[in-house]
Length: 199
Image (tube, rainbow, N blue to C red):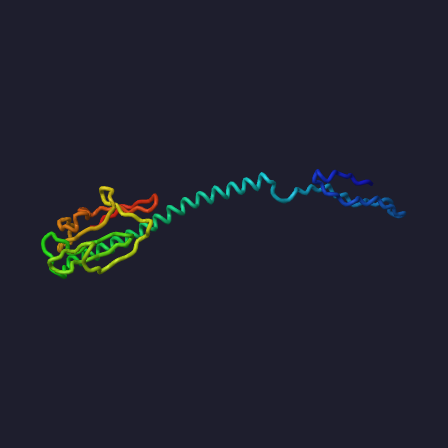
């Protein structure tokens, strides 16, 4: 029995040859083993089009994840900065209430200053010189991210907040004229923003 041959391009593998019928005097013709059918073996690997599709999908996923990662980093940065700013304000308020140098009236017993990505708490140096960002004794400071900026309610850059010996905001002192007169500020990092109330 002859075996059929198929061109290699069709993807059919050659089958094993069939065994011919065997004759024995006592038994006659014995059945031969059945022929195995032709087996089709698909080609392995990826085509060029499939590879291009995979690369395009990987690029889209990478671009999307990068955008989400940036927003997540900015959000975490704002939360960390909020904690630092609130901690600084609590230090400033506690120092104002202690009022070590006996500052009276609406003069600043302490001041919270923000400049060059650094937040600093200063107190008055003596009873006749209110606290200010340009003078006074620094009692606490912390460095903030260089991607962070702080705005007041008028969308101006936050620079300072002065506190009287009663722990309330004041702008009466000459050095506090540019400071905020309310407790609302906004922290910004990238496309993310976070409103914060100091008091």
